[in-house]
Image 1 (cartoon, rainbow, N blue to C red):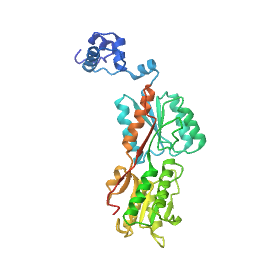
Image 2: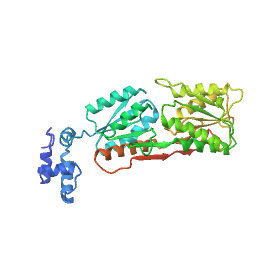
Image 3: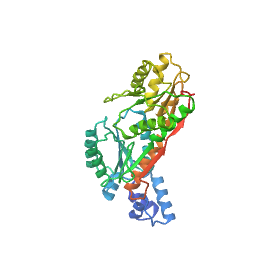
Length: 343
């Protein structure tokens, strides 16, 4: 009735489409065995009646809550914000809600959140896990046998029975060193972030291999190690790294940073101290976050398809939830994006 506040039900849809309630349910659940003309009639009735299915009721019937969780170590980190957008792109397309849990880099928080999520009957979890402890990883591997789980930013062996999505940082930074060497830079420094995250450590290994490939010596004083903090300000830490390099008797002529925000802070501080970028020093970051092309000069970086990684993680976890075949191991290649902080 026009002007009525009556909320349409599945029975109203069935009546308008001239089918049974069970047929409407089959259309809503995307099941096979429904004639095309019947499906069209049901979808038309749903649209005209502005029917919104009850996911709570569906959850009771199917055992699903249409909810997935995403575990992140730093909610304020631009990288995870961009990845969340990718997860949400796919989740909304399939009718899932996304819960975000911020662990603040505590392994115990990951476990406590996981226990709470299991109580809430989430259908699957995407882990941007921080901890590298064997006990924690074994716990999460065991969990993945009971619940659809996907890991991002965590390196596993292909023999590990877990699903993962990440970008190959070893190849990316190896390529970055080659590029710098090809463009006349032979004293290449590195800003090294925490080694507790396997993909970050892999980037450092790529830097070392790049030096070997190019016949360049490893110099201990050219590696600045970040002292990890609970809530790190990476821009500020990049400033501190730059100050360290400025103070060296012999400075590097190029610097790689483990992540873009460290590189951005480094660029800002070097410029403030009168170091010309890229003439005096080349800088390369890693991630290609949106901020990297907004600074002056725009940052050369190894690009991770961050949003696409989030999309793939969501596609995998939802496919597992719904019992569909899916790829379990996705490794993207990092692309060198040359901007104005290199020659």
